[in-house]
Image (tube, rainbow, N blue to C red):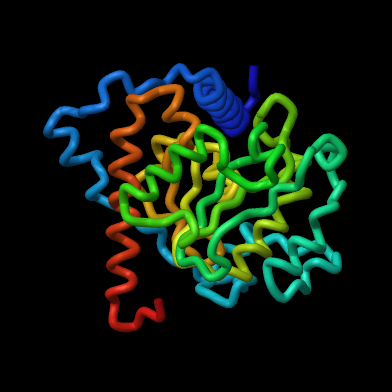
Length: 273
């Protein structure tokens, strides 16, 4: 038994974290009824958005608003860091073998879309179709993503689409910490070059990774987070919608809200869009 209250508190926190992660991984938390009661909708639907307050210190690598220093690890001392555009960056990293996935991939999946996009969509890693074609979100989930974008009047070529990992994990398993550590800096550089106004994380893994959190997808949705000075929101991964159609309604709410946020930003007097 723990000898102090601090040790007991830590033990309970560890147990809670493990239970949350297990629940997310096994898919036990299901949205059985996609329509919440009316009084619940007023409280928990997409209307009340909590915006993360801007950080007070810590330099921002992208030259935007400050972000917490703890969320700004330094770039590795590698040549690709000086890439002037996405093409140069792709050329510099496309043969990367810093983690074992570099030896098992079919094709390196860099990213695709508008290099000056206002919106960047980030998934966790390529799947089988992406590994074969070298382009993110081209399988069934990608086709659904295209339909979702079109439904809120975005074309695939207007946005930029990429993943945290550029190589496919075996059997589409979740990215491992060492793989993320090796590959996420490439994503930082992509975002620095694109300079988006909004990042949309597709799925729990992408949201947790970029925000350095263990919060559930339920808690991450419906809020504007701060990622290196960029607005970041989290919604369901299209592959999850294929497994559970009940999640289509909350996803539709999310993307409508994102579209509204984007339109308001463009209409703002000081907007440069």
